[in-house]
Length: 80
Image (cartoon, rainbow, N blue to C red; front, side, top):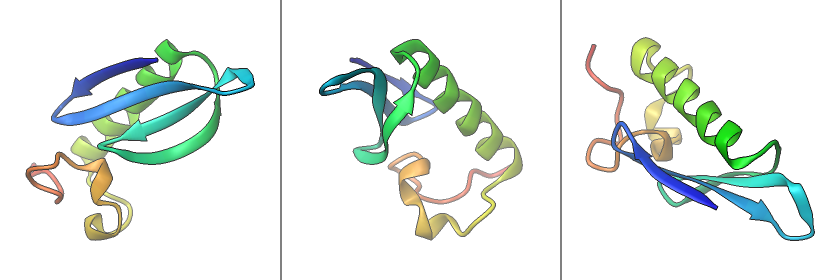
């Protein structure tokens, strides 16, 4: 398991029981994937890429529908 904070979001990659090459991905306490293929480092790199894109471009869907992707103190899109 790896856990870190990136741009105000708590992100985790946990091993899936019985499936050592898959990861459970968690952001701000919300599970977003139960069988992501790859290792912990790749999972956290994927999170960072998505978070960078969200912060740069804004959400493709309303932020209030997916508040777990935003820092807990805002739960809204970052100002540009």
